[in-house]
Amino acid sequence: MGNAKSKVDLFQRLVRKTSLGYGLLLMFWIMGCGGKTTANTATPPPGPQTYFAPYVIGTSYGTTDGISNRTSDLTAPVTYTVDDVAGKFSQTTYQLQPPQQVGPQVMNAGVLSVAANGLRSLGITTTYLSDSNNGRYDAVPYPTPKTGSFAVELDGQAGGLMQLVGQPVAPLVAATQCPSFTTPKTYQFITIPASQASLGTTQIQFTWDPMAETAYGSVDISSSSSTVTFQNIHQYTLPSSGGSGSPAQPAPSSETGICGTTFFGNVTNIPGQLVITDPGNSSQPPPQATIGIDPTGEFLVEYNGTSTQVGTLSGTSPALYYENVLGAGTGAVGLSKPASALDSGAVVGAHYLGFIYSPGTHANINNGPLPMNWGWSSHLASFGFSSVPSSCASVAAGSSTLIYGGDFPNDDPSGSGNCDFAIDLGTQDAANNGLYPHATVWIGAGYAANSTGATYSFPAVAIAGQIKGKYAIFLIGADSTQPWSIYLLQSN
Image 1: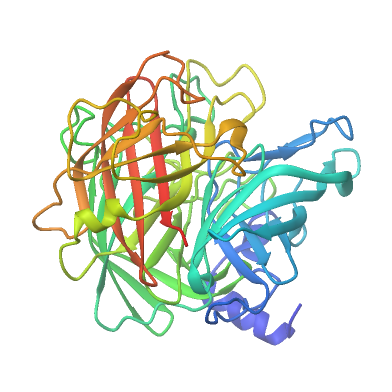
Image 2: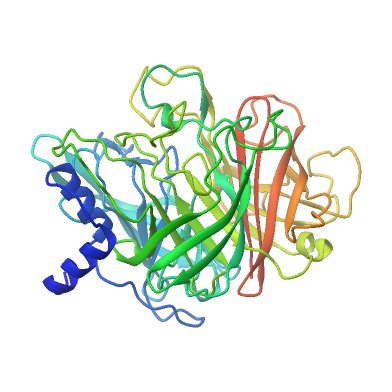
């Protein structure tokens, strides 16, 4: 677990002042126990890489095949360790909510194989479930690997996307080092949405209102030693949401965080210090954002502190349950702003692997355990049809910025992918390279999560850029019932 003195020094750097009890537990969550993560290396990857992933609404884990009927909710960020050479992976959390953990806890572990196009197919061999009677985590092995989980890694292990079976997709970033930007670097980001709902008096932090809260934005990031400065923070609602364009409660124009080695890697915590005045297990500390940036400086992931047992952000009305730095919902995923305008034809002409995520909509969240009753859907997807195959979703008119794709039959990528989605990026913003503020998404009648029985479209916002020379497209939108996100990484 590392040298005790170095841990104390790190503790003093990341957490300036705290108290015992719950505050002490949170303090160790920030500090971590695993030391610095493995340094990033060139492709092909020589071994395991650990990634930071934010909490995404709907993340729960358990068994449904008769081995055990226990199911647990994860309401904290996690790490994923992926070893392409050994063909193994694991999912680990350091969770504050009961059952409170004394140190990191592996939740799922298994095997993986890598296809020629770069897709990782994962098989869960063991799930670890908590026993409420003794607070212990029991290993629940599977006779054969449980399939239906997938990952897409970026070249050089800079980050990627991961979806374990029964869980929504989460963006991953290899936060192997703190930012080193003496000259500010601009990032564009989109929110990781949470479910829309008409809520009671509890757990309202799990909503995302596209009319009033951040959908996308930009920020300039610079650093000096362990201090990371976020300047010129701009946040916008969806142009299609009917809102004013700016969130009802925008972030400050500038924020400062502290970066250091933690359980999640070299991440930046904002506000960078934690002061708890009500010690004990019942205290609810204010939310704190955690931001990881990959070693290339091209990919950013934020967890904004949303959880079931955190306090609220002071000075906000109505009270916010997240640290408002970048994204609303449960965080943000972002790309460095391209130095010049992108060739939109080249962007839609590439082939992509990724995921389609819809958090769902519910009239009331107080009728059952969370997040099991959230109607989210998350499906592996491929895109790369620049012409219009007969099987593709019908669109109103042709466009030079259209790309077609969709999910796979029964989420099985061994066959051909469906063509039940179409994305028209539209016109690139003249002042913001890589921003497509007037995108349109068509959902085909055959898409598994389309309950309307008909093809329809909705407006969206997309950001695009390059990570290690390959394109990435991240999109957020909302139809009349729920939000949608699409995350695409150029495949091999």
